[in-house]
Amino acid sequence: MANMSQSEYNNYREEVERIARKGTREELQRLYDEIYRKYDDGAWCCKMLDDYQTNWTMNTHQ
Image (cartoon, rainbow, N blue to C red):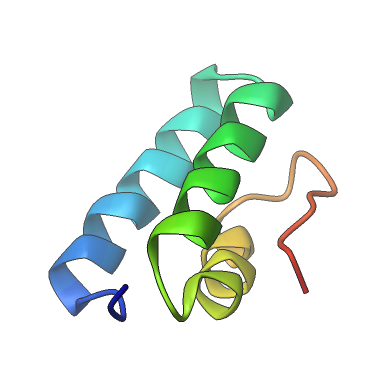
């Protein structure tokens, strides 16, 4: 596994914002779970990305 690049982070940030506007909590949790499994720094990235949504309390794997 590798760390998340800045461009990947930016893409995920846009996805989190989109899900927060029009998606579901379950959809966002699936995205966080995917990020956690895919990257060495996935837990930290999930925590940081979660700042872009305030709709739900999420498991960011911390």
